[in-house]
Length: 232
Image (cartoon, rainbow, N blue to C red; front, side, top):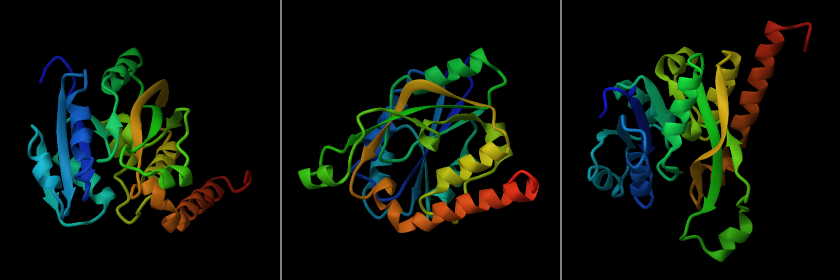
């Protein structure tokens, strides 16, 4: 760890993702930014996730299964960094993600959060049937998601912790709150992480929890009406 660089705490929650976890961890440890604290929060896995995580120089924490929001919040409680970053256990960061984002903070000290673009990809084990059913966009997309975000710790806590009641719309809920709290942010035009498409990732099963998204959007509109009754 280099004391000349602010410490970034990176939190990876994992639940039964031993197939992908090593790649996620290695993409963090391979970052060109030198001051990283990596925390893996095992959310009650019954597979080899714990065994794989403990092979690496990380902080490992186990909890009974409570969901990704709870696991991320547990990682935050264990962290020491001035900055926070998050990665899902099935995704991969590009090697210079944190370096590019820290450069943005250095250029504008008033920034609170820096996002970037995501490039989706088919996980290698997927068969032709899945690839035909689920389209993988060729173009990268701007991603206001936790995996693309680097944020000042104090700014994250100003917005609030992740909602532990939600299943798959956790990032949407948090980002809506961030907008309402006027988070000072910028989105880099660079791909900062690669989002894996596979049969059990949140994107593939989100239809099962579609009502959560509707409830979040309705709640936001209700708050806007309450705050600006004449303009809505």
